Image (tube, rainbow, N blue to C red; front, top):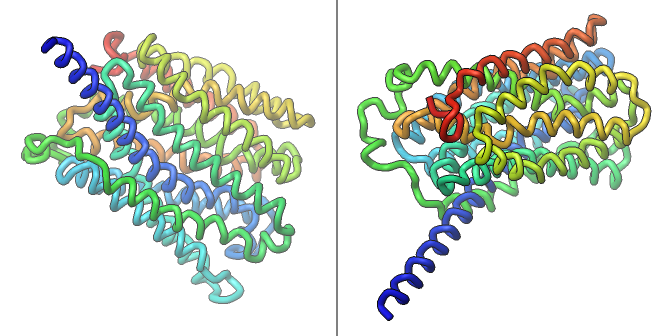
Length: 433
């Protein structure tokens, strides 16, 4: 009888532990969703507010200028990766995540209330840039800390599945931003959207922060005190001892981030500016594609638990190197919305081999006392150089008549990701060195 009671107690404890882990994933993910919603709103709404802050030039020139500000936000990510990585490794993951979500939403609220060029002149684009730099600092710290936290609360043997929810909420934030834009497109006139309607999503992002803060305040800390009190915890000196892992993360993140931003944030503009589709049609295509993309992340994450992170990354690198040019070339001349949807979805399925395991793959490569710093800084550097510049490079090459060069650029970075992934260990999760 005693053995039965003990067995029931262990089962109850296991269920409680699982519930706590699931709640921790939800809590970490909620802030992640809000952070990325705020960040992506800028990209999706730039079609409507570009003329507010940059009144001169044609459509491509205005989009190029707003893309430049978008890319500038990414330049703050390495600083954010270092700052919040240090906070997370030295003072705890929870504190770092609370600070980052507050900073992101403050930047979003500033943009929502910011006067245009007609009211304050050159101060308008200058303050827009400052707000984006502030948000970039926040996002630079959000990724590394949330990826670290989710990898530490995930169940052993199912880490790929649980950690994939980071990109479920990341994509969910992007999808929610896009859905808000679609709703506004169908409820407001084009002139209203261009004059004041584009401010609504930025204000909504600030409001959503209240829920995220409430959820994150209830999270348990995963960073052990003995790791946080180490002399090299959260320091660049401590990270230098793991420079090989750092360089490898830079290598495959460069290709992964460029592919991700090409087929998500830039793709809506590509369908409008290159394929010649109406903005509403492009938004509908991206809404459907991103929704499916979000749903498949856990399946690709679970797949990595079976075949290993290394094999997942080799699939991503190889397929992106081979398929990117044909997909982007076909999208150049596509006329059917369904054909465009299929091509975009194909590209996103390839990207899923990377995005579903992005956080856990990097977290498994660093020890706990420099994990958040290692993940955040390496990701932020590669993202700032290659992910954040994706739109700017694509639009610049288009403006000088060499748009197809961008296709080969994305393909080449996929090849680099493939080569770097060959160095990943074959055992365990496929990522331990």
